[in-house]
Amino acid sequence: MYGAPSWTRVRAAGQCQTAGRNVELPCPDGVHKLRGMIGAAAEASTPRGRSNRQAASGHCPEAGGFVCPGADGFSERDAWREVCAGWCPLFAGFRERGFSVEWHSFQCPFQLDWSRSFHPQSLEICLNLSGRGRLLNGRSAVDVPPRSAVFYLCGDGGPQAWRLPAEPHAFFTIELSRPFLARRLTGHEPGMHPLVKALLAEPPWPGGVAEVAPLTTELEHLADGLRHPPPLQAARALWYESKALELAARVLFQAGPDAELFCDRQRRVARERVARVVAILQADLAQPPDLEALGRLVGCSPFHLSRTFSAETGVTIPQYLRRLRLERAAELLRAGRHNVTEAAMAVGYSSLSHFSQAFHEHFGCCPGLYPAPGPQLALKARGKSSD
Image (cartoon, rainbow, N blue to C red; front, side, top):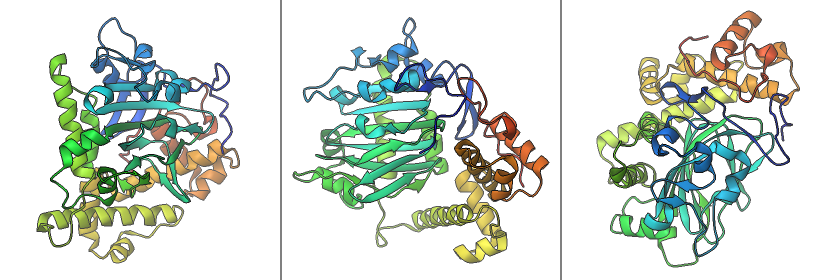
């Protein structure tokens, strides 16, 4: 586990530093400035006269009050208390309507117990923009990298989960209760993921973790839209429910080979190829295969692969590789076991000046000052230049 970075100011034992004013975090389509402590999403969902800190402490504008423990005594407030305003319930309707939508933006000097926030007998979808999580179901561990999506069951004994230390975390969670899923998904069993079927079956209800998938362009756009609800308060419950159902339709179903339409198969193959390319690049950041070799490895022409990758991720393969290299170099620097030159060489940079320039463009500071002093490191996900 990483030690606490020097730039993190711990206000008291067990507390984390949350995002400060006008912080920039990597978001789907470039850079979204997170105003206040949790960004434009919180501004949209917090009425005038209510602070973001009130929202983080349990205020639910849509529910008309504070998020209180239910009949089972469960409450998320204790789980997120250590990250203060880094927890923002965009729509807190789990008790009344069976679903909730939350935005999380924080960093922590220690490993945070994420599973304390999981509602019993529910399913949770995570759209992970930055920071890494880890889920443990029995003896099976699943890592949740940046720019990925995953869902997990919190049955009678849900999975254990943590957010890793010394990283800027930014992610959405959509929490769906078992009664909500039963009401909405009954009659749509064909193609439903086996884990969802298990939750809708008779008890006991097990915990479980689905396969982690790359965050597709469609999911990125959906996630970005969650921060922009309609201005009319009366319409927000309906709007957020429609978004939760759209996300469920995209994530909780698997197309069988017999029922799969040609266009659906093409999209699935494209996503699988992109995931394979990402895995290949991550396996050897210092000496990755060139475009022709990648094409041979994933079974398509270099030209088609290049177009497919850009369509699915929104960036070119060289831009994506650049991002992976810089994020890995940042991890090495945070761990304190590599100096700047060693970190640059470890991820494939032969020019220290080129590395320093790219690092500054991506993170907002030169690598020699990373982690930078202050309450939060400004991150810039421009991704416009290539190696």
